[in-house]
Image (spheres, helix red, strand yellow):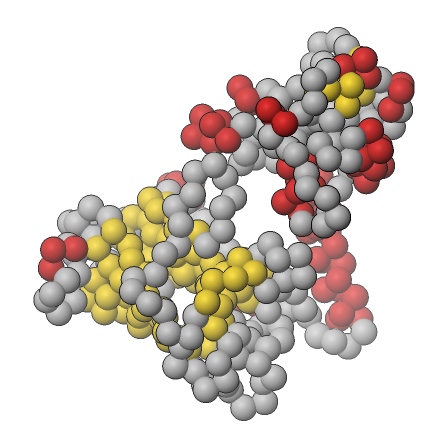
Length: 332
């Protein structure tokens, strides 16, 4: 993150280790957009706007996420699950009298778009990925091909195509990111799949199956207005080690009332969670096509894991989201 971020957290922790708040007397009023940041008592030279503490400005958050409000440094520390020796008090009504929460503008001025600093972080990550690929090539480890890089879905050829293909009607997510959460819930009881976080900090949730024999099964619903054509996606974890394959089937009933009847359409696709790139990221896999009807209203997405492929040292399948958009009428 930005230079001095760790020092800002440590400074606030020394001031109040339970709420990461600071006294009203430690405020300094700036001019123009530089409103209210930490004074020289806490080294404002090290924490200039927007790196220091500022008031929450919910008007800068887009309306659909505004109800969640700004997220304070205390909230970020609490969600990181790093502090285990004490209970943090991050709610506004828990902040001691005469003290203020610390909001960092570049972290939470908007629940969707990064700030200029956020875009800088993205740029650094892209440059790092390119440099790592070049280094791997020079060291004889091979360079990832384009179809093995973490492309989320596609590269649009026109703005019309981008508009259609970016307009998702539903995104059911396994984890809460914003104040609104359309939770990814299965139909019935999964077989061999469990919802948990498998990373060190226990933050990256997913529906996970690891049975070496395969046969784990889970089904997710997509319930959209009948009579239209929809394209279905499943986001999975892609990694370079220990991953397995799965068969994804989209069964189209058209209307939830017709579930007792055979599906109108069935689309099957085998998906592999393993790639050569030395990174582990989510990857959006398109299951049904724009030019072949695969979902016309109520659909069920059925995922069944395969047995471990010979030569692999694991058979993990991790499901993150199930989503859908309207079929594109744009000719490619």
